[in-house]
Image (tube, rainbow over all chains, first blue to last red; front, side):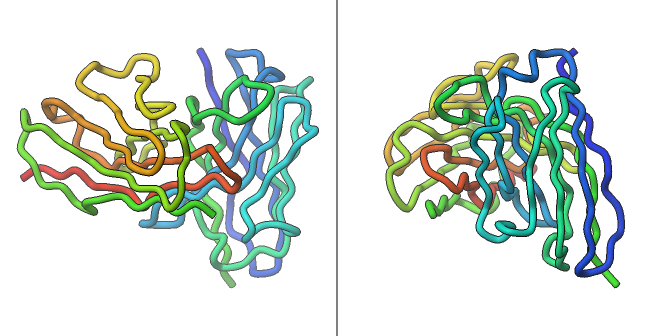
Length: 122
Length: 107
């Protein structure tokens, strides 16, 4: 079964750090773009970051540039999101999503994890 | 940044009726537009990719059309499980962006 399972969410104070992880199974992880998408409580979806199959290209939404870092370990079939300098507006459910196997561009997100909640509050 | 505007914000319909959802892009995204369905407490599910292609396992009552800046998701006859929020998303330019969503609710 194709599956993504996120972990690492929790409560953190403003200015703090958190590392999210996403474990993939059931497919050839190294062949796919991977992404993080978030959803603030009661709000819509916001794409956060993408990483190419070999890690050579990474893209971020402007609001997290310089604070968040996406990375992957193809040997362990996992993708991570290191989040530093967290702000209240980063509070959201964070989803890991699979972004297609094209080498040249990310595709639509066809597989999603169940999400992990991040709350930034004092 | 490409802004995606979805309309209407809420659509009130009865089971069996036809639903027509719109997504308008602030500039051309060619055919690189996807539609997702999200139910409360669940992750989004991919319905349509590249404007008109149904994802694996998606029923034929879901169809997508459009190109450039104007796109439509049509649900030909609403089933009880179709009442949910629907989002469009473009992949033509970075940053990837989502529309604000359309809630399809039971009338």
